[in-house]
Image 1 (cartoon, rainbow, N blue to C red):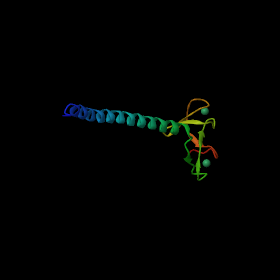
Image 2: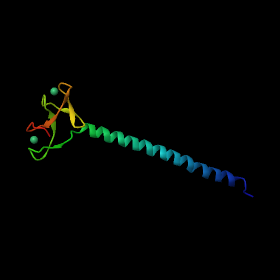
Image 3: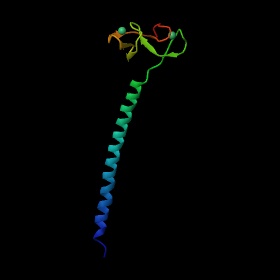
Image 4: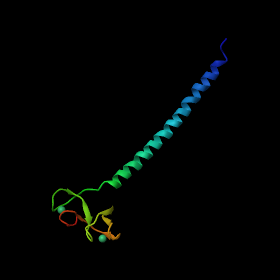
Length: 97
Ligand SMILES: [Zn+2]
Ligand SMILES: [Zn+2]
């Protein structure tokens, strides 16, 4: 009578998916965290384009003090030349965007 292997096999079958689901969730969380970090990395890397009212199209921005690249913050930026807060101006016509 093959009674012995029955419960053992059941236990293995019942135990394995549990572990698998746990691993899957762990991997999914890791992938999600990685994707979010990657997105933030990409967003920080690529220059944000702004719509210039004067030029009428999307332009990159520079600081108003040195016309240098800026690290953008909300509604203003940090001039990479003097490391001070500055306003964002159009890279082409040097007007505030
Ligand atoms: Zn412009
Ligand atoms: Zn500056």
